[in-house]
Length: 416
Image 1 (cartoon, rainbow, N blue to C red):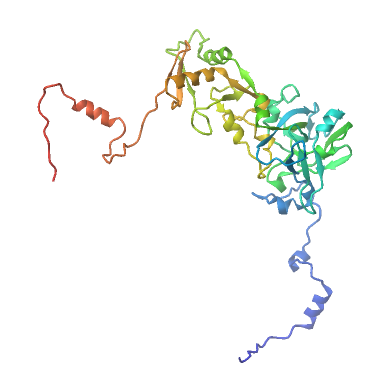
Image 2: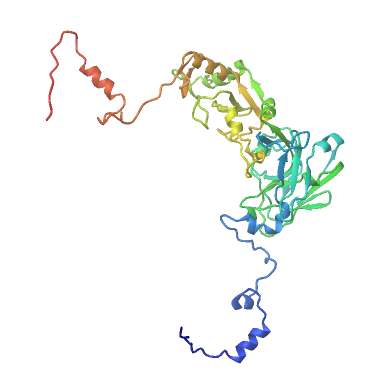
């Protein structure tokens, strides 16, 4: 095969000398001539992407990845055929609010006894480059640090935790978290797409513990109040989660609905007051088997307990569900296992619907005196028989065509 020779100009000696004197750095000549500073100038923020990839953007925090949990039995054997749940058992919220420009440091001291320390799950190093491994049992505890925006909500305290557990995680722009003298990695939105809490389980020790948070002020700081809290998480199975739920008695649940129908304004007259109650589960659109609601929920609609637990998920396949999954599917309120109650009034309603063979009911109409009836659904759309008629038209046409007995004969028309 003949060879083809290309006439190319010889490289300039000056260009060769520049290439020898300037080692390859992986950057273009434009980037070398305009180097970027290692630290951002004052007042400048890092640009964020719409969907950051933590594998790339958070590579420097690979050690901060959440440990892989393995649930084991008393003999140490892994349990793989049962679903487990993590929920927020309690939270110690710092009384001190961190306000940018005013208060920028807070400390919290607490003591861990031998009994509580034995329940903390142990952490082991994984393979090189792999996340940490953690063997846990039913009843194991975890420690987690969270920070929320307390500017608009002032009732964040240890006695009223329902506002805390439903608040979104948010970190100040520049924050340092120390636990027993160890600096904890803060996982920020710029690297993970959203601010994430800190797993502090491995940093908790037997005896006295010190937890501190500091905010570094900058010229771009806002006036947000930040509330810091140390949460205690617990691991349970489905049976354990159900044991934590409570009961809303029949009379209390019934009066809760009837009070809404009472008119307390003498200048307003309400004619035939009633309320329509949704009887379907928000996940399946069918009537529930075990009607549950949050203890502090104000709506009437319930959801099915088994369906609710089954739909609690985790980001990792085969892992216990995330603790932030326990929110009411109707209003988004506190729906942790200890905050759920079984509504006995709706239990009785379901039993009566079974006797009437009306489990297909989607809603009921409840009057002011407590009586109720099934709300019939309106059928819309075409009948599907090819006639183009809509539901209800057939009955109307049949009624209009009905004549008295002994009336004129029926005339048959043939169409070619």
